[in-house]
Image 1: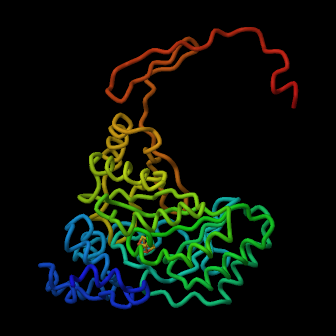
Image 2: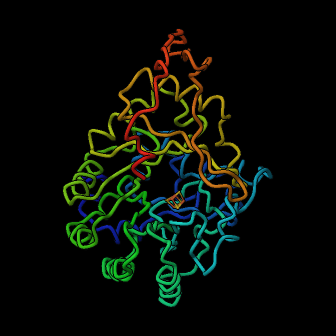
Image 3: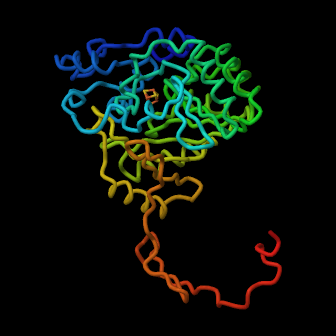
Amino acid sequence: MDKDSDIHRQDWKTILSHSIQSPQEAAVFKEAHDPRLSEVVKRYPMRINPYFLSLCESRGEPLKRQVFPDAAELDDESGWTDPLAEDRDSPVSHLTHRYPDRVLFLVSNQCAVYCRYCTRKRKIGHWPHVKDEVIEAGVRYIAAHPEIKDVLLSGGDPLLLEDERLDWILSEIRSIRHVEIIRIGTRVPGVLPHRVTRELVRVLKRHHPLFMNVHFNHPDEITDEVRRACRRLADSGISLGSQTVLLRGINDDERILDVLFRQLLTMRIRPYYLLQADLTRGTGHFRTCIESGMRIMKRLRGRISGLAVPYYMIDLPGGGGKVPLLPSYIESLDPVQIVVKNFQDRLYTCPQPVPGPPEENSQNDVL
Ligand code: SF4
């Protein structure tokens, strides 16, 4: 029996418990014996579960580079340990309240793999278990702030919590009347699809309306198991969107992203954000320049349906929040006409409406 079929017969906790945590355990990779890597994983822990390791072995560099440590992590002194100032805007532990109507609630300290480019690299693998008191204090904060309509659960990865614990957290948040939607940010469906069990889906279904942002970076992450997991989530009525981080040498090519975004749509996942990599210390070797992201977005517009094109977003360092980076198509605009450049750089002119008398019964009269 081959190794892959062995993995697929195990339950998700068993698979996770066999994760490798040191470069030497991945001796199949030629860099595994670089002595500096032990220092890297002391500072930034490593975790690759056997399912994803076997994908790295069979599908190669684009997956391996996302999770396998690199000595460049030690050499990079640019950026910040907390580039988005999440800890500064944290009124209670594990909760960030930046936008008036939303909070980010970090409910889990576990991930199915540790991504080398992670924005929370400062915490990943170092966090203690998130205690009940921390969750309760976060829930009390949300309940005391009626302006909060939207709660984003993240971590770590919320889907690595036990079913009962996730159910408890979701029930507590759902019981707050002013919370309208709950979102879950997760990489689990793409890196440990075995976790998306029927029982998990039964729990999630109890807490609609529920949105899930699923993290995918490369089409090689999509396997039959991943498709099955996403089908289960979509069938349960969860609205699925994707988040992709633009990573140098991994997916910074419109042909790769074209394939990824089309495949996501076939799994009923709407491409939502293409994220400029954050200015996190130890991740400089992954960062692309903004011009290259803009170029990719412009080329994607011409290649694929608008449904498959995500927003290209930058999360401003220092806590400025997320802002879309939009290629400029407008060449000139005046009261008579607009001149617009299309995706092939051809110019088109569109006349403005002829100004007429003010409309009767306009919105302003009604209001
Ligand atoms: S799954 Fe998300 S939180 Fe965990 S290491 Fe990867 S990017 Fe960071």
